[in-house]
Image: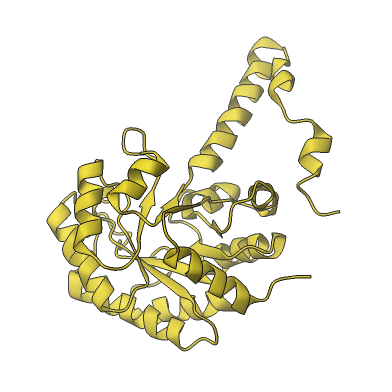
Length: 274
């Protein structure tokens, strides 16, 4: 029997309220979602970069319709709560962020993030007041739903050429005041920065694993105060690394030893729907 969206939303919220940290991996299609669910993860999240790669595009070049179609596919593949990377909300106006939340709920999502990155290299971040207004609009849309949609607000400074920890903290605090349920600052440089951020906010903090030299163990992140650990594009990149290594072996050497490292079809099929 399938799990209702309301029950998924309640389960997702409960994960953020339970002791300790939890890992939320990022599938990119129905098959990867089935595999991760089969391994016992308790919730899933989409990745903007991974879903772009599935479409043969670069991160930031996916439309709202394309992003939500990918999210729907993942939602329908399993009975787990699914949240989505909704980028900046696919528009600059606060109303665009709000509409994205409404449409996210319609495809079965129970959570999603809105970031303060503009997509404009000359002005990579919205001003704090504008960014907070966009979060507030998304929060209002989330609160109007018939279930507890978990709204995450992202401060993107460390990924967008503005590695100012004080500014990131001010933004997260503004997003918290605007009503965000979870706070997120991808790209923090070290555990000291993670601890500083977690100590400066009251809402659950999401840490993004996926950058070499800036990814830490679950135990270390939990000790620093992190509640949720996402994996961004890292699993997708790991899968693509396997594909590239195998394809290069075939093309360059004419050998097929990659088969010795491959999961047998029956084992893979065991994760999939009949």
